[in-house]
Length: 116
Image (cartoon, rainbow, N blue to C red; front, side):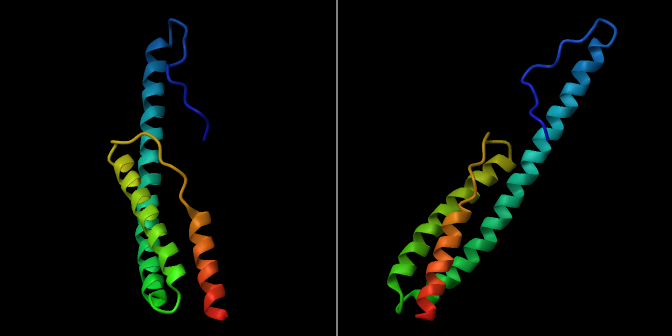
């Protein structure tokens, strides 16, 4: 949970070797957690991408504005997935927030259009 400092903590002479080992283990745990989170983001992007493609096809003729919003969101989701894949493989540092607000907004807009 907590923030891991960039440098190992200063330790007394008798336990100094252990401090470095513990610090390395915490850094490895943090890296593994980030990798797993990135993999989860990638899987979420795959699922959302598939659903949005379906929505895009359903809106193609009747609701062109929804289709346009969905296509833009698909690009955003694909970019997020690429970033997540990069982080999962250790080639990127920070994963941006998943665009869940945009997903919800697009789905609600589609629902409203379908019901009217």
